[in-house]
Image 1 (cartoon, rainbow, N blue to C red):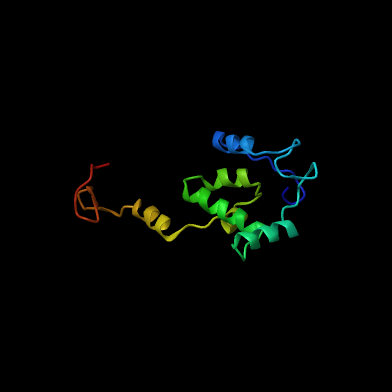
Image 2: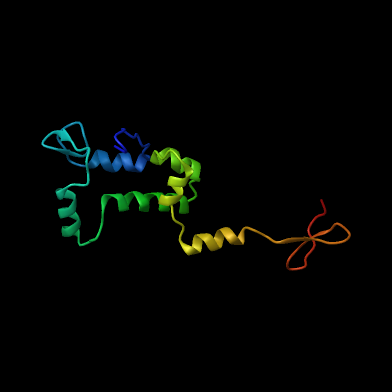
Length: 132
């Protein structure tokens, strides 16, 4: 649930295989005493965080991590907005963060081109490119 609305998320075949392999008795993957769990930010979650020694960790941190990993893996911001249920690009940008090496790779895609007096386009290195 997000902002009081159910949010369906498509799963990969691998994720479905992992979930199907989990032992459970009932219709839901995440359940307590046969009832679905729709609030994951509970004392049980905090106890699990403490037991796993990954403090400080909030449920919300996992959403930020997922969004960042998605963008760093090539998911577009529009796709991420739809997958994550955000209603604006401003919110998507707040959640998705790039690692410095991903930004460096993006910057490397931009090539400085210079147009000479003859109309030849050259890279900053001085090598001529095909004229346009």
